[in-house]
Length: 386
Image (cartoon, rainbow, N blue to C red; front, side):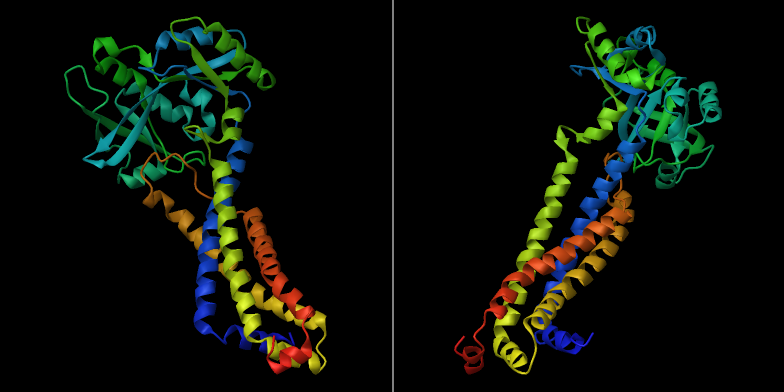
């Protein structure tokens, strides 16, 4: 604490430089917090993934798969229950208001019981084919309550009468879950299946299932793959554990990208603070020589320079993490519905990483100036020849 007046005086010697450095560090740590928070969310989602759940899609995409495939999968030994999944992509009123409704069969709550849709909710939807279950965030977005009508337009999925408008009735509102930051809307598959042209009926987007034994789910996925390898609809089964662990979004490893962005931010902070502290020490070289002349040891000078470098780093890191936590809560308002990436989590691990990075950057920034001060020629410095 005895060095605090000297440190504050040094920091405020060039107020504009100090403010700009602090702002730059804050921006970098805001980015760092969001990226590391996103990684923390991915880790949490992966930890919560069920070992017995398997996702199955058509290997070559196209127009989906026949619903008969789901029935065939259900007959494979080791399969506990299968749910057929399709969907409608479209918009509400304006093409900018994108929305996606998952259309599923009666087995939804059995396969996805942890997603907040209870058996009671789904029984209501099964009795009314036009019914849907909305999550709380989706209900808030569209200002809907139980009993309201919900109409969307889909250019991709036409009705048998040629129309593109699909009208649903909100029958239940369920809780949100972490895997989907934008919430969900579930509808009755039978409704769209019977309303489509005859040539499009009986097709689904994927078949998701539960294995009888979580320990053998990977083996079961391989057996399903093998069973349909030479069929008209080859499949790509993948366990939820494997899908969540990979954090695969369109072939991109999001965790690797976010780590790279966070690291780039730290290099920016290191460059800025390193230049700043080096210039500050160079401007006050004679002053440091004077301090050493009156009895300040190399250790004392080292502590002063390290603290001077740490001040903007630590303060900027704290401000950056706070701003990142605020921005994380605003992402659902900023991103389009169905964006597909969970919200960053400002967990204790993220805070620890931010603090450790701030101190590491401060020490690295101060390393060269400190080395120069410990090797300084006091007489030359006092005479101004250094």
